[in-house]
Image (cartoon, rainbow, N blue to C red; front, side):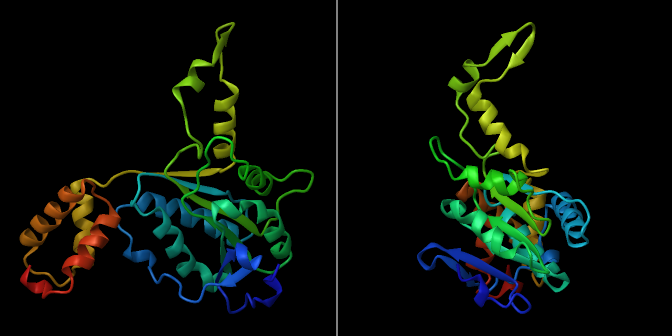
Length: 260
């Protein structure tokens, strides 16, 4: 491991690189700001409250942000780092395929005077994968308790992080009027249950989508024309969310926005 080469006093974030068998400093952070996020006020407040408790050394939870694609899950965590890095928050991004290295990563940072969020983006597991076992040990510990200066924040399109099959439900049984879920369902739910804070994200309504568009085009005077173009763009893509608003902005922002 090469964590000793990182000066966390001046480094807000790093990423695990398997070919280096160590951490690499993230040199160009996504600059997204907290106040630029729209349509997810409840999720922002809940994650900020949990993070502030974590930074203050108070009881706090690991967090799972799950739901529809493009609704701001990853952007929220990136903006979180930009908001709290001056208060000692540090972030380490670990890919799902590298979770087997998670216990070693945590061992190297558990005694440092910073608060670390392990960021796992787009986390999910297929049948037969075993990487979640290392994640479980960091979330709740084994013989050794998990470190107080480390929390895991993960995003996923799946609520339970694992695929759910109808056949699993069919294997559930009733005994004396009580439902006993099949082992596969127990395994699915048990991993997600280790995230004490679970925040759900859903596709935007049209009004929320247009609010996101308006925030990206503050100088536009003809809002009706802008909204017609934005709705047409989202209809062609078949989805309304923050990502669609950003893509619309990138396609149309090059022109004179005041003419929209």
